Image (tube, rainbow, N blue to C red; front, side):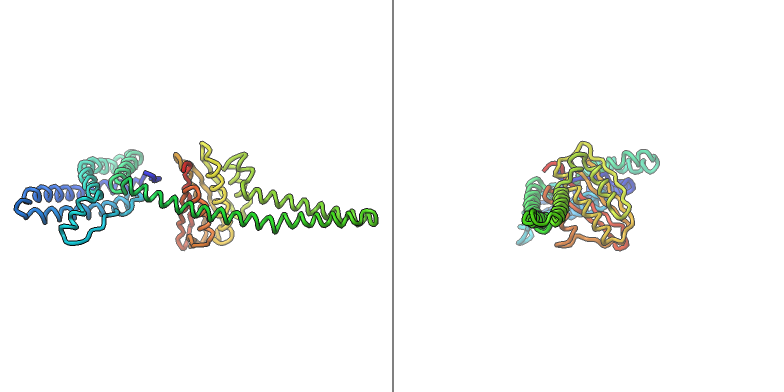
Length: 371
């Protein structure tokens, strides 16, 4: 699965294991009874409505399990994509029978009954044994979540279709972000360093014309040209740092983000653990996400402190910036957070924002190291 699935909270996992058992038992009895009775009586037509109702029950229970697992295990399990069904009752039933999601729902529901017995026992035991609740239950919940994603999630063709759509959208957003960056660099060169260099050329031209007549004026013009040249060099250095900062290339994310935090007008705590070092594109994206987020915090949030955490899990680098401001931030079209989402999308990354009205605000970016 192309999903970053985290282990569920122990309390929720225990509640899931215990509360699911009665549901698993009822599901198993209804489905098995309905299927056997329907098959046994289909020859006298009584079994047809029973089988039709059992099929509909399987699909309804599958949708119920998706919502239940999503709520309790915290897995990003989307609703089922069913084949469109129309016509009379028999035609709709035939579509339901050829729909792969129906059979995958049935497989999950049948597997969950024996699995639910084991999970029920583990859940009851973990209430008494604290070490089991802390270390064992979250891993069992994680494994159940993987099973739910495999059977209740989209099939391989749907996943590939969704990935293609996501990559197409990411490519379009990446092109737009690159074009916006090009215009920014062009504007900064035109309004900054280029104007300074023109002033240097003009000052040197005037000095050249007065070289023999007024040495003191020449000295003043050369000093003016020297000052403009130093400013141009400084602006070019700032521009280059805005494209790819040297400290990031030389010393990595920890040093680069610490340097950013030191320049922030509010107190910022930085924690970075990304070994092994991620690709340059991931480092650059993470650097600018943190920089832009800290700038937004200082300008708009009313916060007096923030925390930056960056860590690597497998092939994903996660960037999380938290502040204690008044909240209310959201991704709006054309806004700063939308720009960060566009930048992350260039490497197939995802930005999420949690910002209740009273705060705190959490901006999280999940950046894959392979794409």
